[in-house]
Length: 334
Ligand code: BTN
Image (cartoon, rainbow, N blue to C red; front, side, top):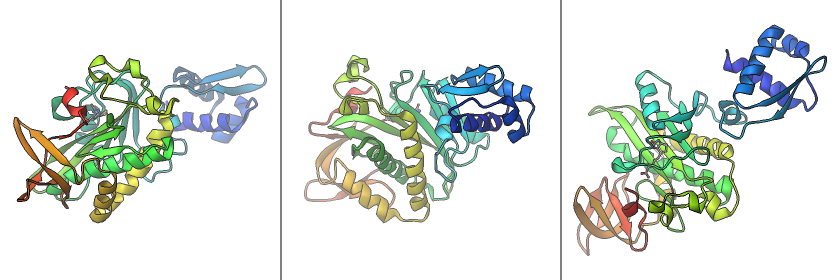
């Protein structure tokens, strides 16, 4: 069945609080009454409650609580991001699904969203808790025409975009902990996992995975991360619409991605600096068994972290776990 046709039926039903006759719909949409009925049945299967009354027609009674592509695309307001959208009840990892789609030629801006993940991936081989129906698990395919050495900027740009989206929807401004953590009150609210298919001199595609703890309650976090993770719900004391937040993320992401492609890296660096938890602070960075200590100065034009060791040299750090005194998010999340 065509999702587009079902979407049009849904729009007509939304626009009318009263019953809408099958005849009117079939005339307006140019399809048979039995086709309309088939689409109604498939919308019902998606969780839309649609009343059907003889001689009066159809009426939309309730929309589903879970994510559907119709709800996400309604009023999305992007040019390209999310126009191609795959919504699943469960996947192993949205990044894995998106990577496969990208290898099969999916377009830039295609988005994969899931209600839950059985093998949600965090950075450095860690697991990402992905229980059903409460959080955002989203991956987007990008095909940036930028040199591979600039790829780390993508994660930073996405972090900035996510902060703007969260501020718009929840009125909270998370801090960014280089390279990919979003923190509220020094607890982990979300993370970004960027995976790329690259050659020496070009990026074929990038999959950016975004996980945001939206409506998890304190006690529903596993004990191992209960004291180091948080959710918007926990901080606000109320639920946040995942649909509204997904839409805001896609909108802000599209705007910040354009800046990246236009080479407006100073704007990204400036905003990142304002939101950064670690800029100007003494940090320890752990990577593959080694530790480096120093003061986090800034990021450079390629997205590497500039770390001043004592009074002396400035080192470029391209990967690692940053530990700031008092902030222990990554030590626990194994
Ligand atoms: C981290 O902080 O370690 C990164 C976490 C990224 C989690 C998201 S959830 C959506 C996407 N799919 C995954 O398997 N991981 C990312």
